[in-house]
Image (cartoon, rainbow, N blue to C red; front, side, top):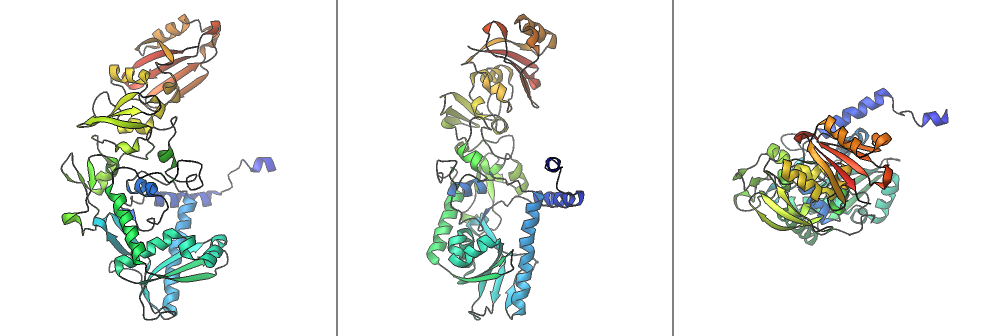
Length: 444
């Protein structure tokens, strides 16, 4: 019975339905669209840049979304308690929403939990309020060391809120989720820290190049569980450009506007140099067919040339040259998002693209067979009868069943690894959209 239990779903249908509800609700939340004050104290500039450019999407479970809501619900309890002890608390604006603060043309923004007057330790001073919950282990560290040491992102968040609202104190209230013990801490405004954080925000928003990595070691404890790890450190066998979707924030043609008439805006306006106009939020999240990736997102190659609608790259690993852009015979953003890095610039794949205007998708077998290491035995129309004759002519005999297969919407690959007469491995690749096929032989 014990062996059986570990294979059973521990969640009942009711619990799973609740989690599914929170998953749907959480995933439906629109993208933030700005650099948040809540993360400006993060240790890594590069992570902040990826986040601002919409390169990082966190895939939360329904249970975690519910946990976040638990923290939100605690805010109302803190507000009620502060009022009950005689404080004046403003937690929402005239529209019933959290107070928003913004700067840098709206590209830097945050939402305060509220502000309070009448705090017993300083009853005549207005305080920015920040409410948090934490597990007992972290609560005990917070009590011992203070918020600046244990939660520097929270500390930075409050410094920004104080600087933008001109208040000089913050009240940080935290609840131990295990015991319901409370911790309060008054934070003093630090003008130098505020200036440093705002300068950091402006630097990240203005640059179109990823800042330096925090460390070159992907197994460093600061990088190991980072949501941007795959994009930042890369893996040549994984997606060439590991971003969740195409958007305007990752395109060479778009620019966040901070100056002139946009300086005091709270709308976070982006303009498109290609279309010569402002972009709506919906447009920014989708991008367009004229999307041209910021070169810094291509971690495995350097740009060597470029022009209207195209960028030529040289791979770091094999010095192969290839072109990214939109139009014919180039690597589009969608292809780079779905193809392994090792395939980009591959002579075998480039021949297919040049001759048949094909597109590629992530199939490791396709990328494995390269003109530099393999021999192309045959290519032609995707005719099953013809392909069978070719394979039979290779004396594969009883080994007609492939040892490995991979298939997606664009390609199907069939690898034969065990062959007579000392022949090398053979792979049949079918390019569905072009109705084209090729047979490759690995060199011994």
